[in-house]
Image (cartoon, rainbow, N blue to C red; front, side):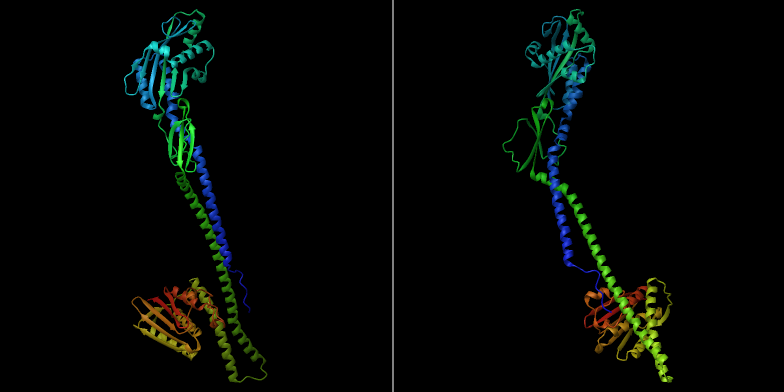
Length: 548
């Protein structure tokens, strides 16, 4: 029977190419991922400034939108004390306000000494104060302020314009109110409480000259801001190494894009002459890139290892399939040979008996009978071994324990095999003679297989086997030492596998590879252990340990 070619072939170059390809993809993925991560971080460096600006300007916006409009709640009746208390609350919550000017003035339809006039409407200052954090207020000269202060002049003009153009028949929007109440300039915010609707009606009548005499109180405050006291909130410390407030025209000569990254965003409102200036070194940005890249790289490497594992499992599966195919092929080939030989002998003997022309003598009948009996025994033993192996694997063998005297048991098998193989040298020793309780059939199967193997795998001039039995405290140790061909080191782990055969001249005449596998299954079934030590061309020693 010719040996069939293997369905699976190992190709080292294909394996190397696969690993190189996957590794190349890994490296490319890591480089691309790193590049994209760096580009994303640099993009964030420019895009995340708005978040820092919003967080930094939140107190300013709160002052502008909530705190300053509280002046309206006083309806023009702020005095020195209440204005001072209001100023203190501003200083305690908004540290960037360095001082506040407070103007108390009146609007009336009668002639006043100090102020500005618009036909029949007169605006006159009655008191001016300046408040600073932790200091007493300072009274300013009203006449000088009225003449020289541009803030008050401009706000007075706004009020006059509002009175002239106001329509008492419609509701004004917040934008209209803002345009009249606020005046925002670099470094300061001025706010005036505009006339209420009922006051506005009186002023409108005054313009026509038919209103009774009346005087209304109003307040104006100018908040002076200091940009150095504005607290910068760096909400993205991983992106921005340094943030500072610079003039809007600031552009350092040492701005070296090769070493640092820069970006900027203008401040709003009263700080419009300044900007937030963001800067980070390239190494600082690189650290952030690496920090974000590492989890992604770890995920890519995990995927890489997973793909390698899948590839290895596929290769192992193909390798196992190859070995299984080879084992199955060898099993069928050898098993067929093992069956074919006795079947052929039986067929020849039966044919001779059937076609004999003359009656066979008694001697010939006994001879043919012996042949038929021996070959039938061979077939029966082979079938029994396969059946026993299957029963062992399925744990379906019934154990019948008996008390065994080891010396007599070993001697019986020695005598049997000396008759079977006259040129086979068999010796044994039993140390610490004891009675061993076990199944004699199972133990006999182990002895039979071990002795058969020793005879089969020994050269003609070294067919020797020594059996050493030692009754120890908890175990019985059997040593089977032969002087056969030995087992290569690479094959030691495979000799107890089913259908596995070492390739040698002693295996060419038929072997199904069940002997040692059958012994191992028997030993395991009996809760024991089996191991082997061997040297090529010097012999092997099988050690079997069975518990009492």
